[in-house]
Image (cartoon, rainbow, N blue to C red; front, side, top):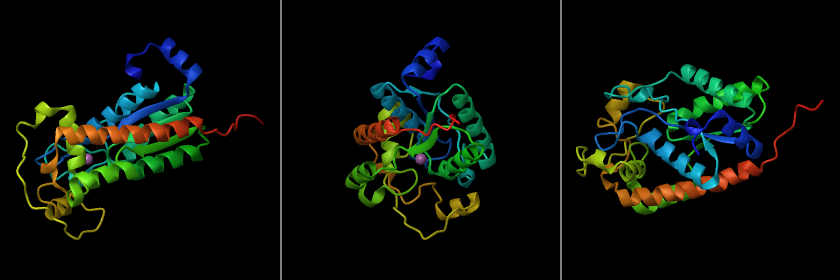
Length: 250
Ligand code: NI
């Protein structure tokens, strides 16, 4: 169920039944020579839309851009400042709350967004905004970590992972014809975080972070996405059953 395909009377009808909406968010950043620039938002969008379909939950248009300054030494990366994202997220949430959505859940595909999202939610709640606002990263569950560990072992790594690259291969197989596919060295350097863009390229020269994306396949991508969808369905069921504080009375 996509918000972009509804007319406003249909949104009114939806709100008589449900008060939850999902917003996929990702990044536009390099994912090594093996992966797509859009990996993070493509994966988050697909997983959010699958859950939206299976649970009859409305999904808002994807916020493709995220906070990726550490990838800016690689061509094609487009980053938002955290302060920009705070304003964008605040405006989106305030709009949805105005329409009486009460459970606003960002389905995230990029670790670099999380601090900013949580800071934004704190700021909105400090303004006494009602409702439940949260971020769930599709990859951040024990079941997803387990299947990636089982398939890729030590090669899953932290960025341009074979898990996320597999999901995009599953979704857009024809886009991989010209991407790198050869096995390379799996490096596990010591480093601190955050890194500047120049530090990042020095420590991780081809943009991978401790990962082996050459292990990615379409078939693995389908399996990992299914595990992520099942985990999200469970979490969202809990969120839909959560009793919200009614602070309007008195
Ligand atoms: Ni990614």
